[in-house]
Image 1 (cartoon, rainbow over the protein chains, first blue to last red):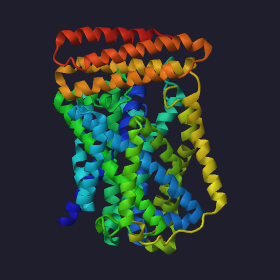
Image 2: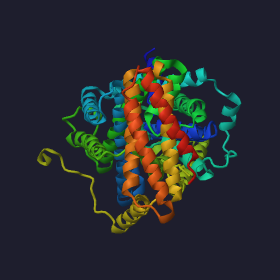
Image 3: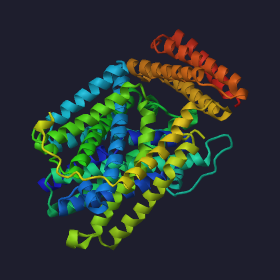
Image 4: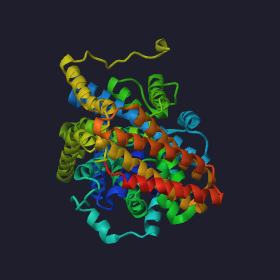
Amino acid sequence: VSRALALTLGVVTALGGFVDIGELVFGAQAGARFGYALLWPVVLGAVSIIVYSEMCGRVAIVTGKPVFAVLRDRLGYSVGFSGMLAAAAVNVLTCTAEVGGVAIVLRLLTGIAYGPLVAAAILVLIVTMSALRFDLLERFFGLLGLLMLTFVASAVALGIDWSALAAGLVPRIPDLPAGGPSPVSFAYFAVGLLAGTVMPYEVQFYSSGNIEESKTTDDLRENALIASIGMSFGAVVTIAIVVVAAQALLPQGITPDALSATVLGPLQAFGQLGLVAALLGALFAVGGASVETSLAGAYAFAQFLGFEWGKEQGIWRVPRFTLSWLAIFGLAALILVTGVDPIEVTEFAVILSVVVLPLTYLPILLAARDRRAMGRYRNNRLEDALGIACFGLILLAAVLAVPLLYLSRMGQA
Amino acid sequence: MTALLPPLPGSEPLDRRVGAAFLALTVVLIVPSLVGVFAPYDQQALGDVRDDLASQARQVLATVDAQDHTTERYFSAAIQDVGERARGIHDELVRRTAVTDASSMRDSLAQLADDLSAEADQLSLAYGDDAALAAGRSRVEAIAIELQAFAP
């Protein structure tokens, strides 16, 4: 029973923790601009994150090595250091976007000015991270993040166009009306949605989490089920965000460049209850992602440079690790103090993350295929094929991401 | 503080060629965004600004129309934020130069951004005041229509 409970909690936590500000921003914008036509990048992204989460979780359990220890082993110090530095920069940007998102949602809930809420959000997140054990921290945000299911309920209440949904799951470029968004913008949002689903901090956090929770090879089946079921349901929430925007915002000509517009769909579907539930869901989803990004950055430093790490160690026994995640929050605060728009930071963070992603995914793939390191737990043929196909997809997105960012003028073209 | 911390066991000298390649790639990724920030407005960039402002005006209209179902705090914050963003766009339009054939369009858009900002500020305080909401709504609708008709 306790194993089934652990599995259920793991699945539910993965579901609740799946969505972050990247999905909220790109999902709503994609739906408001292109209707249902951009659902397929979410599916491709979900398959990729499931494959690589399972793989990095398995490598961590079998070898005891999390992502950045593997990265150093496989790519060497200099290339690995560059990858670690790039991942750290993306983690800082992502954490900035998430913390800014928390402050925006709090502002919409309370009406208090944004500036003080940034400081309050960081303070509360730091206290929460210091006070809660790893598993409680993960479950607290994951379970409350289930309020994001409001978007699924809203999609149903607003009336899903099932044939358009089915068509949107098939990769294709639709006929775009003259004077509307261009194919370049379509490609930009396709890459953005894919990238938002496979943010590098997710595998860094997932892999380290398996070590934090002292999982053994007996837990490999649970690892695979949590990755596949939890994240599949998480992808359904992302699809719902796109669908709600397509139903509620596209007909009104609103392209949501603020979170206040993203929740207009739940407001339209369920009134005040829908509005508050969606805002609370976004608060815990984005709050959880703030915690995960700051920890993922600290994991990266610690695992690559070889100093003591672990949320389960408390804050005093691993001082460099604690200082690392505090520094990431500090840098996020400094960036937000400049007055930069967190939504714009999100777009840059998501696009730059996919550029960095191959450096994180390649070592995982190499390690998971290595018979000497993994023994009988190495990839089977199906896992190999999926891993290589998803890596190819990520590599293509990495090459296209920055040119599309500029050519599409951040999706305005 | 560092005296309290254990040494970093894992650091090694960095291969300078890898470091140089990393720096070069970083510059290549960042420079185009800096060029975009300092380049003067052309018709295309102003078209993007127009679309952005028109979408914000429509968001205000949608929020006003849903007033009965929102909370007062959400209503005020959401509309106030649109006002602030419109003010930011206005300030950016005034600050940055425009190419010769786009300067009059830039000035007109700056005026519309200023108008939208002022209307949003007033509307954000009008929760529950039906007369003020109706008057403000019609003025924002006029701005949205004007923006829509604005050909780059």
